[in-house]
Length: 357
Image (cartoon, rainbow, N blue to C red; front, side):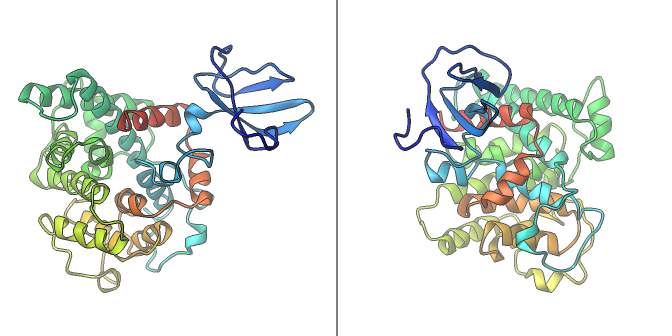
């Protein structure tokens, strides 16, 4: 057992050697018979009537407090984007012009949208492509073609699995096409989904390349590509900063992003007149500014929402950056994860596993 102090307490982790009988995701345990799928570690998190709910830690290990490294469970690859998307989802068509309460970011009607679905899709597509190439760096033109194809396959698979996530008209037509081709989009859909590229890359050049490849299957306009590269390269820059100081890491990010966008404005300055803008050039810089101005993950998301516009996408982009330097609060994390289905969480966990291989 992992703990000697009351291992049967609610929420206490237990170590159980394989093999075990495999059942559905999660299981019910009665007395000493444990049934769990794909996991060595299990939780008892609810006890009553002689039964205990067993939670599959393969799905939960990156998302909930456990005997794991704090950085791993707090600074979660891609979860920052997903939390930002869900927090912003209720404001996309009901914009506000004030900073919402950071303690009430995830509203009752909040849901995951295309930002979250496509973030997962790009993660799975890049993972599959890199696995097919058999390498994590030093890509050839043939490797790039393989990666593009896998990203395209994943975007179409997840777009069809979650058909009502709120896609734009051009993307819906691309999903339905028997012969999908890039459609020269400069929309922010390329940037909102690019975070895995920054996490999976071994060099900044690779991060920018993977960001570009993730965009080009649909958003092959230079502005669409630039938005994805700004996000993937920005994430890599934050992850591999030589400084542990948040302020210094933000300064480093600002210098990097200045190659792509003019960031010489504040959110207070633009808030009164900023309007809905789905272009990369009209939303990615605003998301970066929200990250630069916020002092916690929750404040970054609240600031992103506060300017109005495409709130879920701006929240997703800002959140993908913020989660690298700020922990996502347990309350936000839990409320978000309750809105994701088991398959979504399982596949997200598998993509995260790949990053740490």
